[in-house]
Image (cartoon, rainbow, N blue to C red):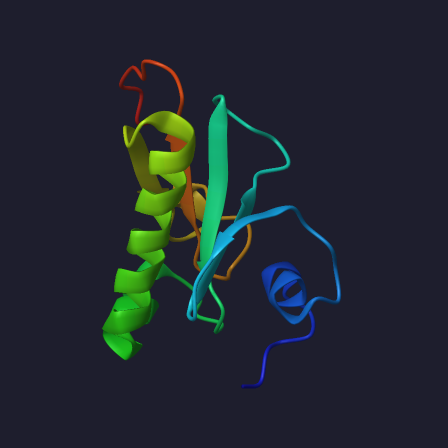
Length: 115
């Protein structure tokens, strides 16, 4: 599998850069966000590079399913299975790293503030 060398998350996948991996499966890894917004704030990413969740779903729905399954596993371990899974797609939506990633947020009572 060829990964873009300038992608931060691809560098985590390849092991070039270190991050605290809290879960993984054949197609995805999960690691702690460097700027947590809740007691549980983990990012789940596919091992392969896709720009956003729609691209991943179109090209490899099994990887998307494995990514969501990994999010559930992390939430079960760290937040009694109660969590929010957020994907930002595009700069106006808050995406800053263009390797699809889901934010697993939990560990506290969450309010609703989409913006």
